[in-house]
Length: 264
Ligand code: DGL
Image 1 (cartoon, rainbow, N blue to C red):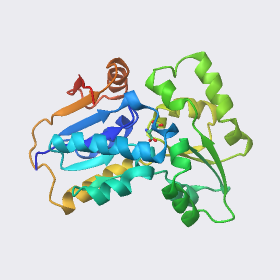
Image 2 (spheres, protein in one colour):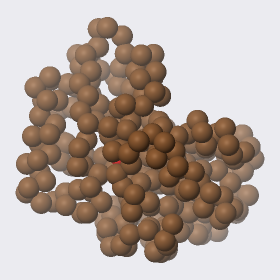
Image 3 (tube, rainbow, N blue to C red):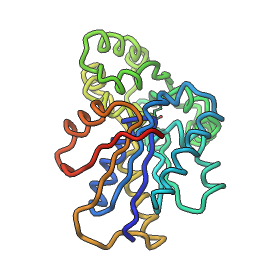
Image 4 (cartoon, rainbow, N blue to C red):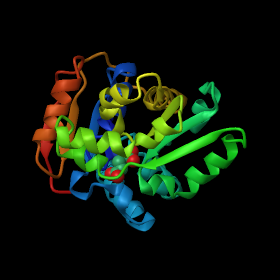
């Protein structure tokens, strides 16, 4: 089926998920909505996150999407149950990889970096209760101001670097050996995290999301059988430059994409 896969996020973060999906399913057409105008979602109420997720979903459906990847932990943990109840098409979500972290840690000390909206969600707390036993010590840090810095391309400034290192210093103090990245914007922080916490294993769920997307497309016979070059459309409701810069800088394997401004 040629219809596109839809993605949405509060901005540029979900491109880290798009990349994984595109690598695994290179012939799928894509529509990606970067709702940067409303970033950060993580500071909003659960109801507001649900309303924004519905708005994005309606637009993707209007554009004939056959499946939607909610490329945002905050939207997944707060809204995916509502989306699944109200729409017939399949949704793939992303949530912090707590289970893999508990399986991989050697010293039973893990860290989770996520937004306030994710850390306070019911889905996060039920997953946490399910997989974290009393022998595992978890240090949670709310990623304050991180999404804003990524959305505004401030990662390479000395001010941000010193802010960020101070912000995640508790991970160092607690001697975590595994760190869960619970926000799709945060993979863009990996070079800084590696500089500050060189021996910590970083766990993000991008590849798992891509595999699940493929499985679901296969299950519902929705895969695009055509081998032609896919149409990849990005829409942002703020300025184009940060998204453009991230797409150019971090992607060697999908040069052909269209970037558009849309007021949504
Ligand atoms: N990329 C979103 C996530 O995965 C960022 C949330 C936000 O906008 O605060 O949670």
